[in-house]
Length: 264
Length: 341
Image (cartoon, rainbow over all chains, first blue to last red):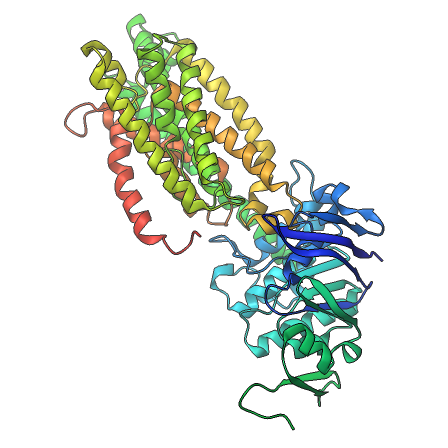
């Protein structure tokens, strides 16, 4: 088990602070969803925790060790990250793209070995893209493509997988498909999953641990049922809403009010 | 189990295809090289040519083969491979099929360096190569400083490079206008690439330099796969993105400078060879080896075509590659605007 923790981190762009002294621990073996309004710093936070964005202050630790002092390859063997809207190069096929996830496990002049093939095969299988292993990625639908990218991150064989808005650009059915897939991986492998999501109700349903951010700080975090209240939604999003139990999952369901439809 | 064999088979098929492309291009090089050995003002039979290569034939044949034809073939192969490899490195590192050193003005910068070294400093030989290196390096640095904005914006790289290429060409034209008549002819060889005068010590030096650079490229080649997925993905996979990119570009600039210092700018080889190689290999990779061999094949073919007056008069290799490359560039411009950011 490995724990990724942000310890009073500050992050920003060109001297503009987005996040100031934020603490966050990703619970081991759980699914964490980070939600919040646009520009609240949720993606920046995730990128900082994956060392894709430089910290202006504080540190990110993996089991207590500062990830800034690890080699990038070492970190990439422990923490996987799927950035927003990744574009595959022309001509690359599914199995080939997934095999690139093996990079941190290979040496200087390392070639793919049969061990790598086995890991790639498992990743293809568990993401349900085995049948299309020889298809060019560019020809796939959005939902399939996102599964392939997740297969690539799985081929990295990390205990922790971070995903920056993995469901954006997917229709609602494929959003559910993808979140089901991530749940499956989390349950079957015990992989710690943390993702930035836009869709509040799906986040509340699929997350074990929900983090609500606004203005660069954590407004509330914990079990979705405890966290996602009217007050929190109002504080974070400036949104008047009713929160009722999701009839399917029992998790909190946020029903926004808006200007033209009076709340009961 | 079956899936495992599928994955393994796909991997083998991919490598086989790479090898096939490389082998095919090597065959083209051998065929064109053989043609270039046999055909010319002094027609040789295959027997005479072979005897000439091993130094056992008639003294006249040995001279024609070893002093005239073989060095020219070797020069075309070395220079072409260097341009092809440099182009592949630029294009994959900057993730833009247009970002090749001839479009970006790196080779023009090397030419300007050489022209300046020749006319202003009165240099020749290795010292002249040094000024070519300086020219290429200055242009590369200028592009970097003008185009880098906390991240890679490959369109800006291309636009800045195109601008600098024009600036360098104008400066070359200006020096040519100011120079004496006999100097102007020498300057001309720096505006149109030619492999007809590279031999002896210079050829050995260029070949050795290219070999060293190729070994260095091989050490960095593995980062190209992750880099082609974008900076974020490459970092997430454990690549030191900035170091890998700077290292790759430095090696590519050195390859261009080395080749240009010998032959002058052989137009479009660095642009076209990697594009052909990538299309043939078609695995989403940078196709580095295939690009180098394709560059060698293209340059040698173009030189054979130019040398034997297929165009009516004997023309240096750069004229032929320009005639073939320019339409290709237009086609590329017309068809790829949607991909680069």
